Image 1 (cartoon, helix red, strand yellow):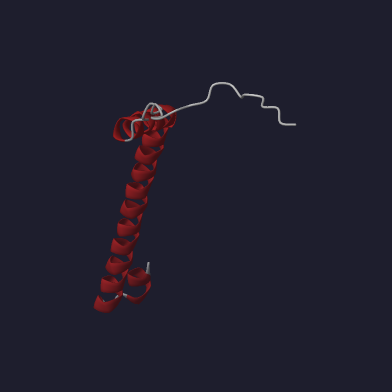
Image 2 (tube, helix red, strand yellow):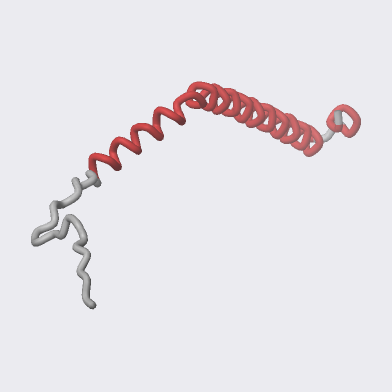
Amino acid sequence: MLSGILRSDRAVAVNIAIMRAFITLREALGAHKELALQLAELERRIDGHDGHIQNLFDAMHQIMNPSEPPRKQIGFQVREKCATRYG
C-alpha cells in the first residue's frame, strides 16, 4: 500500500519486507498451532497411562529392594513367666 502512494523504490522494498514479515508470522503461528495439536494428542494418549507407569515403577522398586523375611532369633527364649513366691 505504501508503494502505491509513494511510488518509490524504497517504498516498494519496505512493502515487500512488510509482506515477508506477515508471511513469516503466519508460518510461525501455523507451526505453533500444529505443535499444540500434537502436544494435545500426546497428552490424550498418555493420560490413561499414568497408573500403569506408576505400577511399573513400584514393581521395579520391589525388585531392587526385596523385603527380607523376619530372622529367627538365636538363643534362649522364655515362653512363660514363672511366678516365684518369696516370703
